Amino acid sequence: MTLTETRPTKAPRFGRSSRRSATLVVGCVLAGLIALLALVSLVWLPYATDDTSGGRLTGPGGGHLLGTDKLGRDLFTQLMTGSRIAFEAGLGSVAVAAALGITLGVLAAFAQGWLDDTLSAFLDILIAFPTLLLAMLIVAARSATLGSAVLAIGLAQSAVVARLVRVLVKRVLTQDYITAARTSGTSWPRTVLGHVLPNIWPTLVVNLALQFGLAVLAEAGLSYLGLGAPPPNASWGRMLQEAQATFTTAPAGALAPGVLLVLLVIGVNLIADGLRETLDPATRRRRA
Image (tube, rainbow, N blue to C red; front, side, top):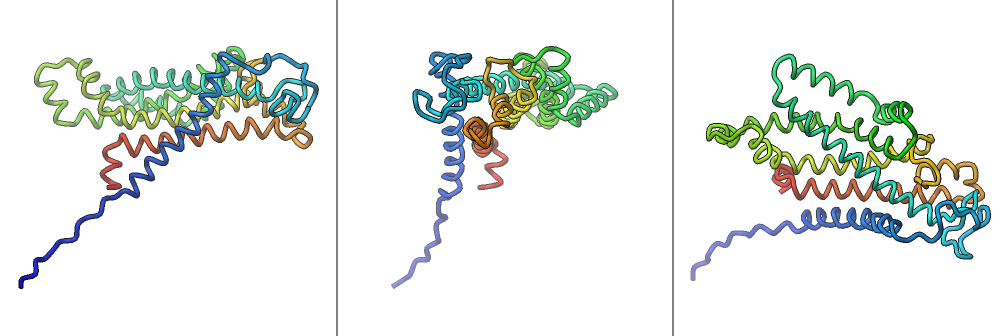
């Protein structure tokens, strides 16, 4: 009787894959619920944003799910409006940062000599400058509106995106398939659109997701300082500022926007982490 030697089979790694999936799912659920609240606010609100007939600092009940603020406005209505403003600020700022950052980053990657050094130094200076302070300067020079806040935050974040794009593009340009594309006669614009951008997109998407969360926090900070969306727009930052004096007597006015702000940022960060695991092949190989 002969015994055949059996080799142990490698067990499938379901644990890490399930954890990655759970991270992405939890992030999508958290951000998705707040996004749903924002979408509903476009077509329906319990009360008008300037309706002050609810009574001053009333508790939950009597037609007001979360009560009212110090002016008699419905808190749930303000939360719904604030969620819409948060997504407008986040998406708008990321769009501005992506448009400017990708353009500057690609140009800096192709630049040589003194032009490369000048662009790199300029990006380093912008990155070293605090984002919120730069946004405050831009908003103060214009006017305190949501559009000004979006433009200011987007401009401040574009330097971070541009620096990342520059590094990624320079790395891609050293690959053999870029040399092959150029040898075959492909123009530089077609090479960038067809080969460079698709290869940096996974890492770029993760960074833009993180920039979205930072933009939401920056808009809340500007609104807290009175430099964001003006009344009757109920930004979460403005709600926190207005509820500061009445926190001990009516804590819901500060807790509700604060909790939603934290949940949205956590959700977006979890989405970014899940996308990093899913889209970035280098990360998948390191953790395999």
